[in-house]
Image 1: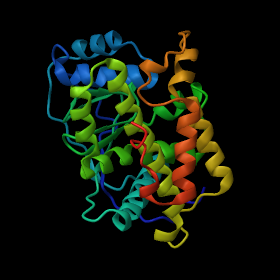
Image 2: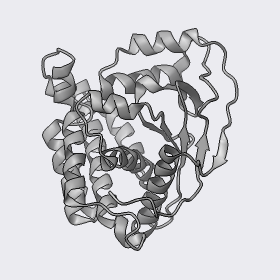
Image 3: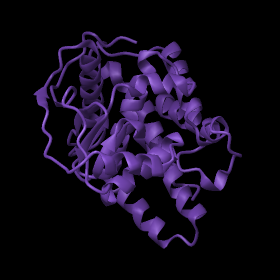
Image 4: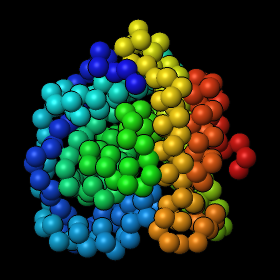
Length: 280
């Protein structure tokens, strides 16, 4: 994947090296984020709640704003800036989110976030939260170590920001409140996540055009992204956790679905091709 010459926007809130801070007793936000950790990565919510309750009282946390100078930080900055540049051409009125890099744990607009939960987007403060230790965890789960696989994860979280701007996320929440069963509610969650995968593909298809080729992916890069998409499908995660596969409990989609929608976004390059809600 080519990215070294890409534009850096400097919209990074770098909290690395500051240490984790907590919310006394966990709080509702901690419960929400613990659920994210469970549904995305198979982590027991009780584990994350116990950790947050042990970390003490909340304190305000602010990092260094700008462009990190280390390679890992520069990569996130370049990819995020390129994703922003693509969405500025695709969505009228697009506003860029902030990317917060942290280690171990950090306060967010949605409660307390920690590395065990993986990357996530918080609509309350419109930040993408990323602990870079996740890359090693992703490989442990069977994902690729390729740079594009990491970029795919970042672009997926930006996809959730797009869904907040378009109102799709809010509509899903309303539909889930009306759902007659947990399985029905989960189907809306799957559609939302698969659309974010598709949006990641849309970004990849347009990355070179908005950067004069300074950020660009190849067919081989896409293969590595699809390998990662397959590794984090709900069925794969359930099998790896030693559980039986239960489609009604899926919240992100099967491996095959995640691969399909990432590929569909890349092949079309058009957000209009990402209507994952049509079948609902």
